[in-house]
Length: 258
Length: 66
Image (cartoon, rainbow over all chains, first blue to last red; front, side, top):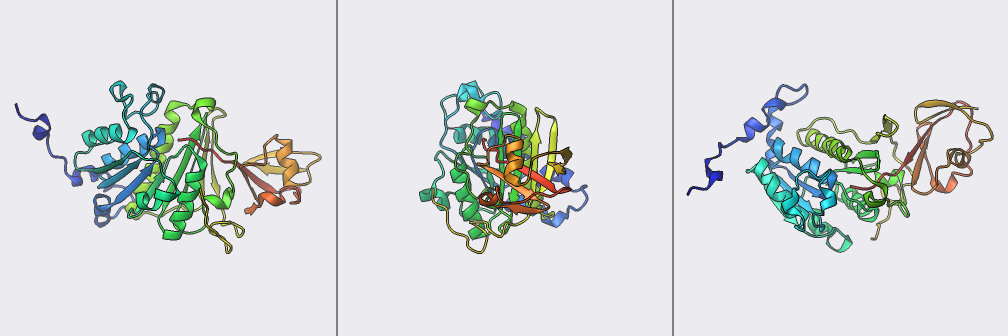
């Protein structure tokens, strides 16, 4: 019996970007950057599930997925790359399989580990862009510091309860620590606070949109913080200025240890 | 005193500093960012940073979770 996958029509990179070509500001010669781009997604929870599938579908050539978690039944309401058969598997492994069904030409590197200071640089080095969808604050601060030092853009996002926010940091001030120099005591989780399933899809998609905008050379939006509160029915776009006293990107910036 | 807080006009009384404003809204000072008239206010000076009539204030709580 032949392998069904060999009978699938080959979807070329050109077809994946065809509908981008009509967009204002998109230059056809820059669309090749999607195929050559290496993007790391840290945290394959609700945000990572959403951003990964849009990046793969749109034709990003390489995705590195970083998360040491395994799929739990309580994830299935919002982590839409996973099905019941994936329960107990590493999230990155299950996500990788789903992404390759969506985009067989995408190179997916699944790393079932947690990012920490001792392994962070080796995990996210050699990438053009980082998407952060972590559920803990300290590694997020480390990524912010590492990315500024190395000039690598990061699209940060968080979502819990009915609230979410997205902030892109593009290798220069302002950065995450301009707003929150310390995140001690900031961790709240979806276990105790709940999470509205579609909210992570919406926010992960916004991360992916900012990532694709960056990769194809559309204007970055440094210092633009999107905030959403779906309980109150409010969304806001806040302009964040550089903070001269920022412990990371200010004149007295220092390294953050985990 | 009339302020614009997170894009909405509000009237407050007995508010002299950013710290007072956070207390007015019962917002914990930890893991919250404040932008006053376009400049970030350091958390260590929330209680000294004066607020004037007509100021525009953004109060932004960190939202983690993924």
